[in-house]
Length: 122
Image 1: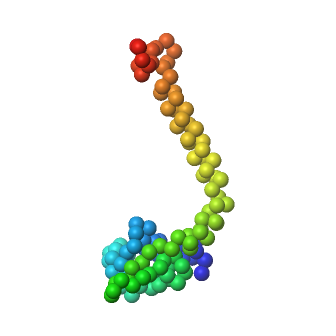
Image 2: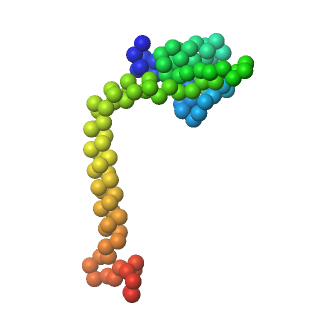
Image 3: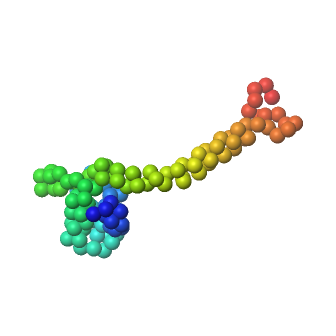
């Protein structure tokens, strides 16, 4: 299954958002997803299984609990795909940075004929 097929489901995206904050128990994940999406516990378990089987999440046993975490390697496919498009927003971010720097400089330069209140000795 393609990475975007996996992440096309809002419930799976939300699970990954929860896991991005750190390792979570299956019970904690289930509680949040059931409350937000009004789905059953078996449905949440199925989404966890899809994330596990596709490599987006891993699980480890801690006694009777199952703890899930994000597997960052699976996100590399998405990152590689997005890399083709980064130039579109990187250029805009660079331009924004330039404008912000100009604004900071302009606020330090007093208007013609007025003293700079930040300058020493005025």
